[in-house]
Figure (cartoon, helix red, strand yellow):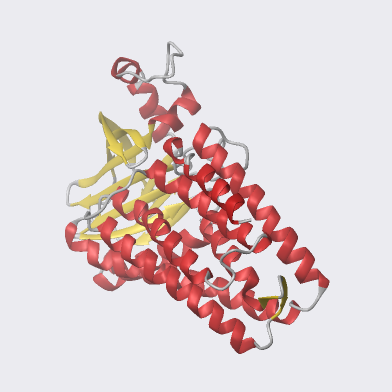
Length: 375
């Protein structure tokens, strides 16, 4: 069995070279005395899929091909963005376009201005619909700079329009914004959730006489979960901090495919136990990689240095709150059902097998650059 595990583990480690992270764009709005200045970083691979950038079809997007599409890119993007100041629409005007590298590849950088009737607006409403019709999992990550303070928000098809009170900006509101973003990041991060669930599923069971049996007490199950959650939290906090502060950087492709591989390993361990008494070690080791995945959002937002500490603490606490909410919802119900065939065969065995299948598809998608699953 251990030899088979080594073969599986080696196969998983051989995949990471080509993986990519999910589709995001980065929108920055700066509210000043003379209007609103905007910058929008959009992945070339997403634009190529939406409007076609690779004119000769050779699989490479050249500067000439991109420059020829500048007007079309600006028209396509700005038609899917609306800004209102105190209820009145602002006119968006495209500016220059550049190219920049993010952690997951090349992005076009569209600069634009927003002319608003109100010079010092009290409220700003932003409506974001980029790629909503072709990719329901796409997210727009907003950084809103007002009076030297940065706020953030996440746009999705489910949260396409959001209202911001500009005069309410403060260090506390910054902290809350990043905390909320951390909660949503783990709740919308299906790969992080499945990894956590893969580790939690056996928490209400114990490995005895080469089989899983119900845990004798809630205290034993809670202690096991406490070890796992603590190890995962400590590990991803370390790498989240190091990556956000710029001390360590790993390629997004390596990080995202290793996250998919970690889910497969954790779920397979439920079906063919090897680390049954040391799952906290698995949580810690792979938690280091998940921390880089969490950090990619903050790094790519390009936050000012004076906002990094607030962003880091708030975002990390948000991730922990989101994680604890999942544990609080899962553990009591799982403990109550632990002796039933529904849990032991349905939830635990079939659930672990389903997680392996989903994670394997994610790994293939990220390695071969195609989309099969809608999440």
